[in-house]
Length: 306
DNA sequence: GCAATTTGACCCCT
DNA sequence: AGGGGTCAAATTGC
Image (cartoon, rainbow, N blue to C red; front, side, top):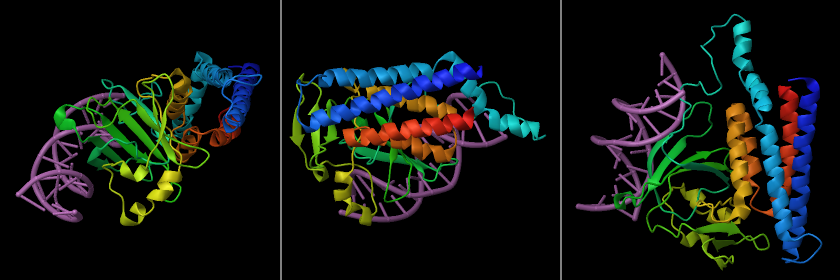
């Protein structure tokens, strides 16, 4: 890829991200003023712009030219070693990595959250130390497995205690009555309390919910149990598991982008940073930080790569 | 006593 | 071959 097209692509992506940030900012102002359908730009318009920016960034990022180029950057480390006379493993593609696989038969989705609470009751069935990860990965299955529910979840803590972030991978969907699967929790920006959104209705309902009343199978150290109030005030990235609301498509796109990012950047230190983008995206104010971080880090990452 | 968690071993996938 | 995912016996807590 020549330098001009690389620069153009970079400009396009940064431009899209800046546009997304601005739209999110406007959206936040509208939400704060409780304007739903007034003003020069409707909330729906702004959301559509944000989604479009994600799409454009994503398509730019995942274009064959970019993939090929970034892919070659990814194998750079091993190539460099071979240049220095070190033993070189047979390398064909980025995907050719032992042990790095995902179960293909299951539908899965990834979320980054500040809490592993999601309203479902899970039973832990395993824990594993993961190479280059600071924290072990925990494996959960739905507590109603006996009733045929095949939902699984993997929880990987990304950051240090006190500023926890969790990468939660959901495999399969609940078929049990564990909790209404169309109900998701969100954080109310104004008072930091959780509310539930029911995607089954066309109108969004929100019901004040005492977070501690929602049971969860995760064991926490006693000092952390006392910290539940802190977990309440942390924001939570919820996504519609059934894709019932197109307005939340942008989160799916971010997840996809993040997964692509995963394939490209294997450096462990970058992992936590990647989490920041998603963990912040469930509320407008944090969303602005997300855009800032993404733009800054994208520039830095691209500087490193190209 | 029962249910949930822990953890070493084994299996699967790349 | 080696890393991630799952199993299941042992352990722990209520």
